[in-house]
Structure formats: C-alpha cells, structure tokens
Length: 462
Image (cartoon, rainbow, N blue to C red):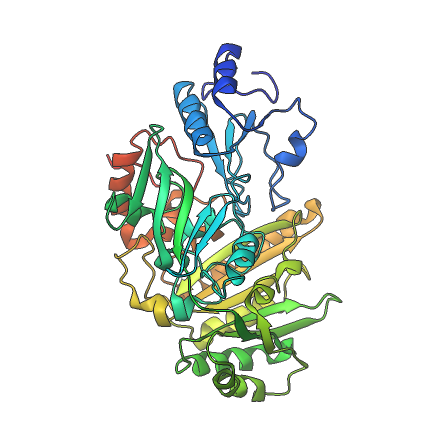
C-alpha cells in the first residue's frame, strides 16, 4: 500500500472516484497527509500516540457524519471516532483508515428554566462549564477541561459532583446517534431504549453520538482546594480518609493523591469539593483540615469552573501517558500499604496515584440500570504514569503495571473504561462487568458487523 494513503481493510488504496464522491457530499475539511495541517490535526493529548490516518474528516454537522460513515462502510475502511482526543489509549485515531473528527461541533444550548443542556459532540468540559456557569448551572462531568464530553459520557463520567449528582450518564437525557448503517436515531428513555441503555457506559460501540442532552444542577460556587501533607504521612492520611468518608454527606466528593509538587517534592494530598451551602461545607471539611499538620491548605470558596481547571496544568497536551484503573468495593489496610509502597517509588515526578471515593448518588443506581455495572465499587485506585522522554517509556509503563498488579487482589476486577489502553479482551470484558452479554446483544442489533471497533470493543453476540 502507499504510505499515508487511505486504504481499505485489505490494504488497497481507496479509489479517487470514491474520494471525489465523499468530497461532493462533505461540507467540512477533509485532511490528508498532503495537507500542511495534517500533523497538527492528527495530534491527540497523549504524546505516546503517533498514528497516521489516511483521511481525517472534520465534520461541520450531522450530515457530514452520515456521509463519512456511509463512505467508510461502502469502501470497507477502518474507522475511528474523535471527540476531544483525550482517550489515553489513542482510540481517536487509526493508521491508514478514516477518522471521523467531531471537534468542530461546538454548540452548547442551555434551557435555564428546564435545567437542561444540549451539547454537540466536539465540546470539551471547559467549554461546557463556561456556558452552563453563566446560568448558575453545572453538568456533572470530569475533572480536566480539555477532555471531550463525548468519550467521557459514553464511558460513565466521574467528576467532582459524583456523590451528589451521580455519574455523567446518570444525568444524560437523550442522544442523537448516527448508526453503522448511516441512519440517524434519537436514543432516550422513550425512544430506542435499548440503545440508550447501552450508550450510558458502553463506550463508542454503538454509533457516532453527535449531540447529548443533559440534566443540569444549580452549582455555581464550591468549597475546594488542596490539603497537602508530606508523603511520609500518606498511609495515615489514607486510613483517616477512608474512615472519614463513611459518614460524609453526598455534597462532599473528595479524592486523595500521591504526587509530586512542581519542584519534585513528593506529597500526599486530599482534594475536597463541597457543592452545598458554604457555611455547612466549612463544618463538614473542618475535620479534614484538622488532620495532622498540613504543609499547605488552599481550600476556599471558588467558582466551579475554577475547580474544574485546577488540575489542568498537571495533565498538559503532549506528555506521554499510561493509565490503570482498579475498582474496589472496600479499601483495606493491605491495599493502602501497596499504594503507599508504589507511591514512594514512582519512576517519574510527573506520575501520580489518585484514590477516588464514590458512594452517594453513584451507588443508588442499580448495576443493570445503565451499562456501567460497577455501582457496588466505592473506590477507584487510578495509576497515572506520565513522562516526557520517549526512551523511558518501558520504565514508567512498568511501574504503572506493577502498581495495578499489586492492588488487583483487592479489586472487583472491574475497570473504568476510559483508563483502558491497549488491553486484551479479558480486561475489556472486566470493564463492562455483568453487563457485557447484554451489551453484546445490543451490539449485534445496531452494529452486527462490528464496524465501530476502534474503541473498548464489545463484540457482537454470536
């Protein structure tokens, strides 16, 4: 095959006649390796990803998505879907195939009276927060503003409001979807209910979601920041945090990080977010402030978008990243010891371990009510390896894998799918847990040929 050319799944160049037909139907830019902006356009957040698509179809609207899907199907072309390009495994891209790029779809429309938000699939968390905050509202999403809402939502969506308002999918009201046949469907509780169920946690397996409708909540100012301690106190901090959160109100979501300051000093830190009345929040958070002797306390009232961007500097575009997720029903002392041990021997000062405590609204949704099955898991131990020198990749990936293996005996074997890199089928099945077979049946109905497979792939049922 010709280098950097668009090819079909057999490796043959796609004909110029077929490409001309797509150009006539497509409104947005079609970028290939001959274009000056090709290398910039194919970049994604994770610097470890270096894939060379044959064509990047930058959609201007839903009709462009339909045209691109039909073109790819008719010509048997491997197809990837790009929203924000923040997937750690690089699934927004593919080599030699077509990328259906949604990043130009940036519309956000708020109905303040109904407290609902319509957002197109190229919108990032930062864009969504900026618009909704103007109305004193927030949609529960993630924690890094450059993340796309599409991939985050379809995988579940964990953020600072998870204990009060649940996962992102728990606030999803409907989706506009382009199916593998190039048809446009609405999925909601009242229309294509099986598809709507699958989209809430089943990833990008079932179609291209071009727009989302969310429920929003009156969240404007929160009480949040860092409570920093020496790394030597990490074990004590984690045990205290574990006990404290057993009686914490839903308004408080808090995570613990083992990380390094910009000067390389290793620390442990609690990061709380209280989304209720601020005076009550001060009382709730006070025991966290009273623990030990913090080396820094930055907790203060702040606008919700300021909290949402607080961690952005730690996860910039272009660095190499490798992540692992370990979901746990409990967080026993032996697991804490493993976390602390591996935190003390991180191979990069840019890496971190983040312990997320769920519960509250998250846990009041049944395991089979959405495709996200892990409602009984109150803890997620996230391992984030990050580095700048590509020659060191094996070292830092090795540390992350060792950390994940050390805590696996304490896990439910479930995973948060957005953490999954190039994993085997067993890991992907574990990510979907008890809902895998139902997802597989839904996949057979809506995508029997597994056209959408550049994802955390659910195979169609036999």
